[in-house]
Amino acid sequence: MGRGGERAGPGLRSEGEAPFRTGFNGRMPSVDAHPPNPPARPAPSAPARPAPSAPAHPAPSVPDLYGHGLRLRPWDPDSDVDVEAWLHGHTDPVFRRWNTPLRTVHDIDSARESMAARAESVARGTSVAYCVTEADGGAVLGHIGLNAMDPVMSRASLGYWVLPGARGRGVATRALALTSRWAFSELELHRLELDHALRHEASCRIAERCGFRYEGTLRGAMFAEGRQDAFRDAHLHARLATDPEPALG
Image (tube, rainbow, N blue to C red; front, side):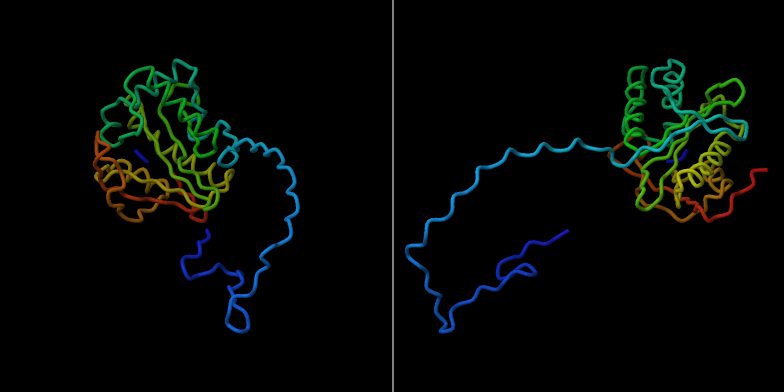
């Protein structure tokens, strides 16, 4: 499952600063012992109020996506069905083997808190979260999302999970293909990355099937299973907007 300026130091001066000079005779220039009174200072003006903080960057519109027999829609933190699916996905032993989230989900309340935190990230424009459902009937199958969205470098990372009862049906492959197409064509991203823990062969196959080339091993790039004080290696896959779109067949 995928996952300036410098201060001048002693003896130095800032660029553009005039050097300190003595008089022509090598002595310090004379200074009037009784300088004229300085002009009166104007009364200080009231400090300007700081402008309200803006989002990190504008949040993209998150439309429903259809294709490959799937409907991808935003998660709804107010939906009991969605919260229960989120809880089920995050407490699944297979999910926990390959993923160690920062925010642990263990009951309905923590599931709602986790979903609310994800919704805040979406509102800030740093991520997108999709609930993967059947196009016909709307049954929840899993999750796929864009994370660490960087508009400057035009890239993002992808992560996903599939509920136990929906595995073996190509859900992750179809959702990844659909989301990637949207990210390249509508968000106009240039690079999408996907990483997964070593020995997670299923994620490796899904990534390569969707055109995400294997680019190498990232040392100590993920939390170890069930721990946030230890790390494990990960495989990095990536796909560029200029890469050919794979045929799922």
